[in-house]
Length: 139
Image (cartoon, rainbow, N blue to C red; front, side, top):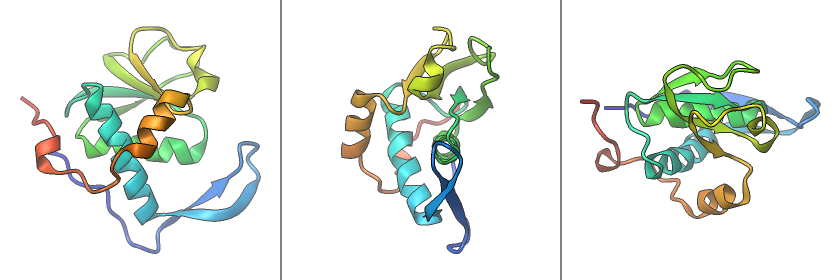
């Protein structure tokens, strides 16, 4: 069974613009937790399970951190996606952005974070902590 991602409340991740320049704002652990809960639920609705290898091909740092936290919340294994590789070995699912999707093959079920339909589902998904009944056990 998965454990929730937690850290000290004063632990924050500085946010940067897409150009890499610092911007005003930080991602507090509470925000990371809520955002990862929503993304974890999207992965679960796509059929991702505990123990699955999920490829991460996400460049913006903030999205990358949230994606990895979401994968860990459901008990899956995050696998870094090397540039130019069609898919991470053994990964049936993946998380990416429109900018990276073109370089990735069809070997995984890719969740495109900045796709309109993904954003719409994300915004209406609960950010409450995941319940044990939502998580699947590793057989």
